[in-house]
Image (cartoon, rainbow, N blue to C red; front, top):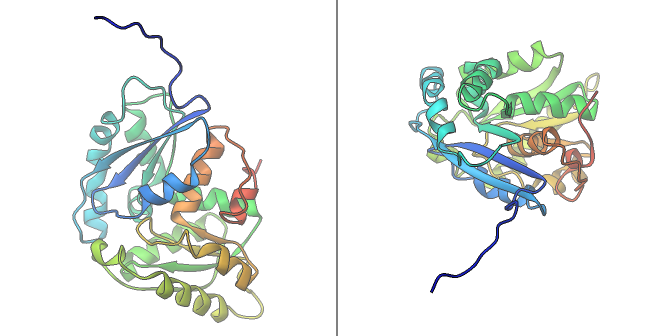
Length: 255
């Protein structure tokens, strides 16, 4: 027998969010799911090819694949925001080019990436002097540092794990990240102490440790993933305050 049915507006009654995740990423999807677990907010993922070696040339190669990865998101949905989940590639390629590649498939969608999101987050928090932690090789770390400084921020102290293999980055322990955060925060000069700490890379597991670090250090701690998801939610008009995640989730976008 044929059964009757009706239809509704689906899951994303408040917002539809799309995330383009690196082939090698083991962390972003899980943290995205936790931070955007809000009634009426739908989360969708696509993957983009990426070799395991993180170098400027391998990062730049992803630009040509962004349109194809965007097309794999459900065509039946009008996405409010699409995020590209790679901080280092956004730095090398440039946020404007990332947005243009995605909007070549989805012309009306808002686009963000971790670099753009970290800049927006730091401005929303009103911080200037940053502690800066990355897992990257020196060339990639320096490029991101330059981008932050061009945006008007001062790097008070910084350090890197200097690991080029993204598979290894995904397995850097939470304890190691905590230790690095304390070390960098304490290394800042007394004249320019850190107003906030930036921990870059979507593959670093930071979500569980940020509340403890913020309480201990007394400053906001921004990871690529917290900044990216916060920025996506705010761009989509989802203004729910969730300070239990981190301080950032208790603020709005800066004017």
